[in-house]
Image 1 (cartoon, helix red, strand yellow):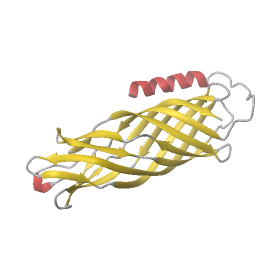
Image 2 (cartoon, helix red, strand yellow):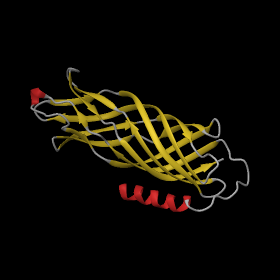
Image 3 (cartoon, one colour):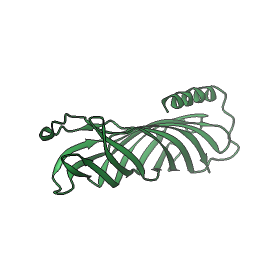
Image 4 (cartoon, one colour):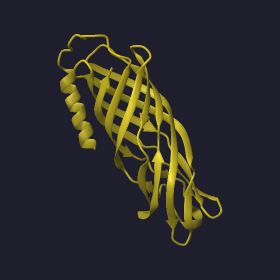
Length: 212
């Protein structure tokens, strides 16, 4: 996915170097984008001294996910974006050994500033909030028992990217987000907390947008 992301940047640079064509009509306030996104967790976790587990030993796997976002332009420069996907399943490892899976659904809402709203190359930055719902937890450590994860996570989100106008309605998009997602790890039998995990992924996305 990093190679795809790099290729996207090169393509955008080539497109952005061409002269912009005059707009044939006033652009609409709505945009829908579809992206392929590489999700790369930070994998920060607390140590578990009672089990001899060091810090950062709990890992969530990388994966490529589909993403759809809906953007509404409040003004030429300011827009609100809602980022959606469907519940994503992840493998979890402890010190390199798989201990199970879980699913997460991470809708994110950002407020964006678009620097060059009338140009062909249109960079933007954004900031907002993320809510993640964790479900279908199936985790267990031999000799310890079944584990559970806190179901809800609220955190911040930062974003940067650009659109390249291809024609009156279509845009090429590259987007990077940092999202803060964390969850307590608990013993399912007692509810006692044994660790805390910061998934905190970076999401690298490449896709197309349609504005209307």
